[in-house]
Length: 425
Ligand SMILES: [Zn+2]
Image (cartoon, rainbow, N blue to C red; front, side, top):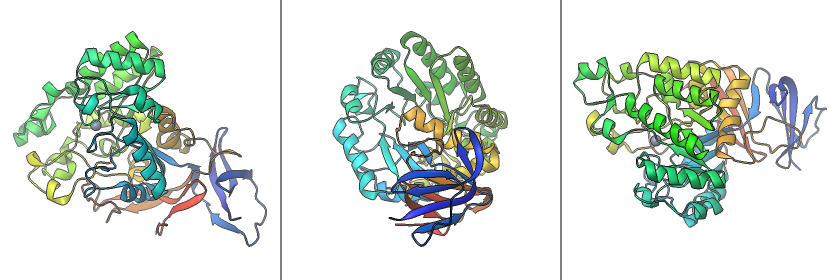
């Protein structure tokens, strides 16, 4: 039987970080402590200086399968995810067809299993056809394994419909995840409303487009008791709303993307479509609030919103370009570089909290004997030099930049899926 020992790393356990060896056999962590010399059957990996913790979990990935495989597919996205230290991703349901029924959930999960590089979970639509008019078959989606329900790409705008969804999900124990952007306030806008947009003469989207939705939705959480998750939070006032909801004891969580932690609307000055996404990059003060929110835990998790688009779609004038950027490969380095979390909060934000929000049973566990061997070894002093991507798409603002921190090893279900030299198959 093949065994692996991660030697001498800073190991993230439930009791905190300890310097130890982590022994893995048959897909499970069999010991944490001081390993003996392993003999011929053991692969030993020197993890001196590395943080060795639970594999990262991305609760906001656009696999683009089915329907848009020219942008990305389950196989390419899985390679990208493994290279980024991820052992699980949650697929967003705005595919073609949209994931609003159990059989498409099962298809998505099964494709992930076939590829076998990460655990693929699937979100499901809140509304049928993602059309915002009537509820999807939430019980059918639940039975197929969906725990996170979202019309991502669009907000669930109708408060009555949302209330019914929340009533139902509160009974099931599911999570309503909201792409919180008011369509009226966002209409026609391409970037954050502020001095930069004024200078460029560009139609813009105020922070209030996000804040009014979250404020309304929190009222509905009070009414229904439903678990509620703010996707890709972008504005300082929204961080305040989430903080207040948490102080009140409401079941409200939030995620932030690496790009909102790394950039501001000032970076849109050159109108490069690699900086166009929804919600838009906001002001420096908003970015500072997101960084502080992630540090304090008001913002629970990092989620990539990995959203591939082909060159012919994205390499057009800014106003005509689709929203979205890729980021699974570099998320950990960007977060380490731009936020500077201690190892406990880092693995909480990258793994433990997202797995808990999306209720992925085998992921996000502090390392312990008997836990599934989903492990990422991260070098906080390494360098990630962004020059190329394993994605089918290249739409990202990170190219040509260097970030402090590097994913050295990713192990999924006991098998090494990434080493710094490249993705293993
Ligand atoms: Zn979204």
